[in-house]
Image (cartoon, rainbow, N blue to C red; front, side, top):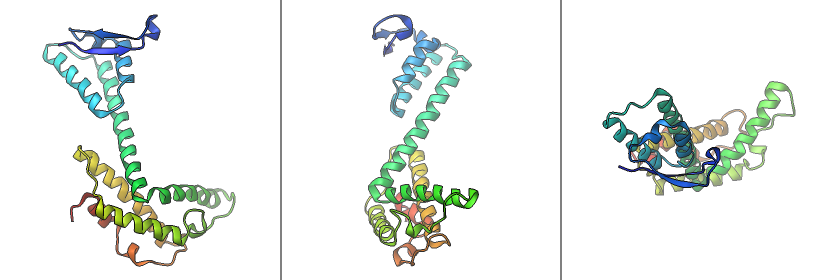
Length: 206
């Protein structure tokens, strides 16, 4: 079995080229492995790399611990990156993303005022992008979106983690909106949607 790999051999003094390695010795070469990992930008690509490693192991090759560590580090990085990407994509599409971003900015102002006496703390409802109108409009758009657009990802574990992130983002807004620093007048649609219910709706488990 051949593994074709196009690498930029800057450290090897050559032009980018395709390397075919029938014996998969590239798995044991740190420069070649680093070049391969640098070109992997998705989990399916990484899974293909894992399959190649499995073939090497099945043929009797022993993968060094240092090489395994490199692969594990790349897998973790891809998982976090993909989780963040899918969470942000859903939040932005649903209308909640702009509220989350505005709240993060308000958090910074509030923290500095409360912890360090820098500036003055203001209610969320008075902060740019978090007015009563902004909150009601964004939340109502979010509720309509999650009812019509359940989260559908190929990886069940990733899907559950993204749904958890979405529910947590909503929970933070929900708690601040109904808490002492919110300053909002209660509105029925929010009272009707608990953070727990939102996750179930996103996953359509109800």
